[in-house]
Amino acid sequence: MTIKLLSEDVASRIAAGEVVERPASVVKELVENSLDAGATRVDVETRQGGTTLIRVRDNGSGILSQEVELAFKRHATSKLEHATDLEHIATLGFRGEALSSVASVSRTTCITRHASEATGSQLRLEGGTVIHRSATGRPPGTELIIEDLFYNVPARRKFLKAERTERRHIDAFMTRYAIAYPATAFSVIHDGRQMANTPGSDNVREVLLSVYGPDLGGSLLEIPADLTADLEIQVSGFVGPTTVHRANRGYMTLFINGRWIEDLRLSYAIIQAYHTLLPVKRYPIAFVVVKMPPEDVDVNVHPTKAEVRFRDGDSVFRAIQRTVRATVVTHAPATATWSLDQVGSATETGDAQTQASATNSPAQQNRARLAALRPSQPHIQFPPAQSGPTNVGAPAAGSTTAQAGTTASAGVLVPGTIPVQPAHARSRQQLPPLRIVGQVATMFIVAEGPEGLYLIDQHAAHERVLYEQMLSNATTGQVPSQPLLEPQVVSLPADEADRLEEALPALYKLGLETEVFGTNTFLVRAVPAQLRHIAPADLLADVAAAAGESSPIRAELEEIVIRHICKRAAIKAGQVLSTEEMNRLIHDLEATENPRTCPHGRPTVVQISTETLARQFGRGGAA
Ligand code: ADP
Ligand code: MG
Image 1 (cartoon, protein in one colour):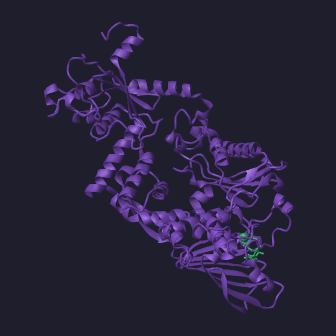
Image 2 (cartoon, rainbow, N blue to C red; image 1 turned 120 degrees about the vertical axis):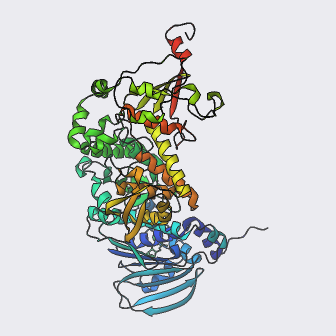
Image 3 (cartoon, rainbow, N blue to C red; image 1 turned 135 degrees about the vertical axis):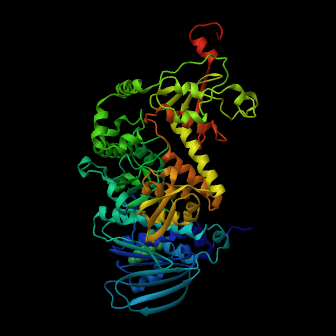
């Protein structure tokens, strides 16, 4: 083939591939244009996840009648004149690619009126070609209607996900921009249903309440402006308190000079700021807005402008890390001790207690706890090693209390009573019979078994138990569900609500009886009996997060939901357990199919052989 210049049509379709990946990218480009045009009101409407219709209407400056066609030409922009302008860009757009790209892969209608003109214009394009033009009346501003996206790019159409997924992307984007631009009123309607509507009162808290609901929106902490008031890099925004966290990183949002960006390293600055303050594998909710000199950040590195390059990335990292940390720590002095005892209970029991415990060192606390424990700890007679296996899970054990000796004797099984399988025939996954010795660091259960010493992680073990119980309940359809005395109303952010709605049938199967109660609001009527101690709002947030991780296959969704819920429901590290509770837990763990790992794959049991112990004590043999 000879070398030819591509036709404008082919070139713009190639460019469109970079800019327009999915309906949400169209919404992004159009909304950014509206904001660049100074709009104080932006209304977004979609049908079928944006595949058949995306409408974005604003009250911004509008486009001059003589420039409407030009706006749809590639590299046509009003935001940039000279190459040097690229060094200090203050608008969201500047590449002049969006309208031409979007128009080239859809049927587009643009209705616009510039504030200085008496009539407006209407332009209709198909696949980028103008097919109709007329004069029209409308208030100043612009409306873009994008129909049949990718109708002429079947390959791209094939890659579109389920409508819900596409809607979710749009909602996630709109939520972020509504928070970043509080002075602009945004509304979102999907298939005729109003999903979001922010007041545009220039009050971020009001937006947060409106998009996240009163619980979450009210709990977020504002980064104090004075932390960076006089500095070149100014950080503001809202971050979650340490009691609010999520299972994935998707709840951290970064805006740099009014632009939403994705930057792994800066997300890590936020995660770092919560170091030791959150449970492992949990991530903060954060909305961080950075203002800095435009010349110190290069926004022209990515077609969708989602990535930027900094002249001095380290100082941006530090500014974010410091301000977020300062905000979180000031509001939550108590959680300084979190790393040792990931105290579910401490965060729930209120400030007085957590503050008191913050003044003690973790070691001191442990000592105090141990002292408190000692009197109630039964004195257990070690049975001679050869007297046969012990089984702490024997039914009688559950009813024993702290009387000396009872637990042990009740727990000992006569060898002959071990059902069917002899010990050596048990699969490796299974647990040997164990006899509880006590609890260490309010985290681990110490037990004796045939192979020596066993340490059981109480949280991981309980997670495993709950997980298998709930999974089997869901499979057999026998769910012990507990009706709430008063049904609870829970509101969620639009994208979470959408995901939750998708999961509702699965939730019924799990005993979490929840129904839609209004826009982004749900009514919880009953919860699984095992989870009655958890706030319904927390449960639903977990489920929504879980649903976000699943593929739409129902069975898998249930499994993921259960895994998420168990994490929150399980006994925490830091919780003192009675011997009876430990016995029951080990008993339940023995009954599971995979007692050796928690549902997330971490070990539940660590074993130290008698030989190893003997060696540590300098004894030659095991004896
Ligand atoms: P860019 O935003 O990079 O300039 P676009 O292709 O998105 O490129 O838009 C081209 C031009 O059309 C913009 O520079 C602007 O002048 C005009 N324009 C697009 N959308 C709007 C709008 N909603 N209101 C006013 N002007 C608009
Ligand atoms: Mg643009």
